[in-house]
Length: 118
Length: 186
Image 1 (cartoon, each protein chain N blue to C red):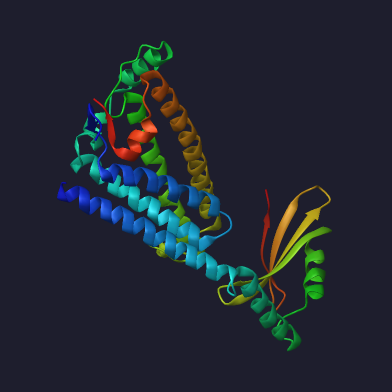
Image 2: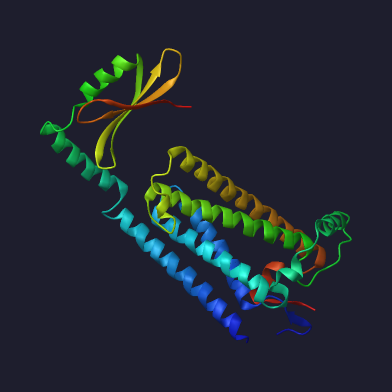
C-alpha cells in the first residue's frame, strides 16, 4: 500500500479518535462538578458577598432606577460580570409593546447602556 | 477479494467518510449542550475536511477532484438521465455525487470557520481568540451563518443518502458496502 495512504489514514483515525475522546472526557468533567450551573453557583456566592458588604446596589434599587428611565413591565433581570465589572441587565416591556434592555453599573447604579431589542 | 471486483476507494477515503459522519453527528447533537465535546468534534470535522481537500489533489485515482468534478451541464444531464432511468454507471463518483462532495466540503469549511470565529469572539479562545470582544452584532451574525450551514449540511446528508439508495437500486449494487470494503464490481 502506498505510503501516503497510510499516513493520511493514520492521521485521520488518530485525530478523530483523539479529539472525540478529549471531547467526551471534557463533557464528562462538565457534567461532574465543573458545569455551568456550578460556575453560576460560585458567581452567586461572590455576588451575595459583595451585596452583603454593600459593594453593589441591590436589585430593588436598580429596578427603581430602571423605572425612572422607562415605564413598563420588567421581563428579566440579570447580574453579569463584564470586563471585571458587575453589571445589572434589566429588560422592560413598555406600553408601546417595545422591549428595552438597560445596563446599570452595579456599584453606582448609573445607566451604562440602553438599547431596543428586536 | 471476490472475483471481478476492483479497488475503488482507498482506505483514507473510507476512514474519512465514516469519521466525518461520526464527528459531524456528534458535533450536531452536542451543539447547544456540551461545549467541550462540540468544539473538539468540530476540530475533528475541520481536520478531516482539510485532509480530504489535500487528498483531492494528491490522493488515489478516484479520490482526486479531477476524477469527479464535472461541468454543471454534465451534472444536470446525469440527473436527467437518472430520472429517465438511463444514466450510465460510474466506477468512481458520478457527476451528481461529485457535485455533492464539493458542496458538502464547502459547507463544512464555512460551518467550522464560523464556529471557530464564534468561539473566538464569545469564549476568547481557540485559534481565532484575537476576535474576543468584537461587537455583539457580529457574533450573532457569525452564529446564524454557523447554524445555517450546519443545517444545510444535514439537508445535504439526507439528499446524499437518497442519492446513494437510488444509485444502488439502479445499478444493482450496494454503494454503502463499497464505501466499507473499498471494492466495486468491475
